[in-house]
Length: 302
Image (tube, rainbow, N blue to C red; front, side, top):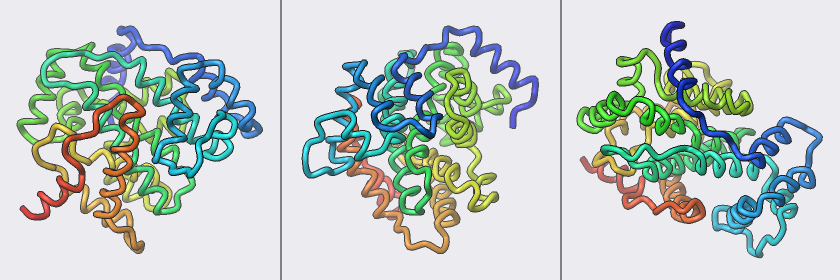
């Protein structure tokens, strides 16, 4: 955990920058998600008031990600069939995707970061579903948003961060470890701070903040299974990685997390690859050129 001084330094850095604001439709949905009495009719209003969001939501529910046999034509029908939580979480990430800046420098690629985030979200959700966790949709959103502060940090600290990104590639180390060495905090803390400023639900803030702390979460047992799913997903290779350097950590964490279940890792990775190919076009992202299954098989053969 960062020291008090390191946390103060991080807050000062982020406060000095111009933080992006979420669209009103996303804020309204977040507020509704905290109201246990709110149903599809209430959730439909802010979505239908935002034509762009409404179009994205209908594309989302009609994608093969859900696999409905007939077309869903209305927002209320979508909310009823898919659930208000899944739709609100998708709208949240769609909003974040639209407001996070692109620093455009060096080896960093914003679309690559969103590709990585999507794959990690699908793995966290898929694993949560197979483990029958009640918050699988929250795991999807938490994993999608876990790296959202990186572009902001790149923008505010271009020289320092370019060095860290280059070292991550050259040394095969986790970015969070390099950040803590250099600054005393990591991008998980930065993203959690941003999530709090946006008044995101506490559950999201916790999932985002803890995603670099897999060992601690595993030691907490069943109470932290959801957070462990998100943290495990953060160990997936980036789309631009030539090899999966963190595969041993991922494999060990997976075995410990699913101990006593029949969850099959190659099947899970294949499912994530399939859903990534279905989902990426909805977010105007290219499908990753290398699948997780390819990374896994190459590493296994090696």
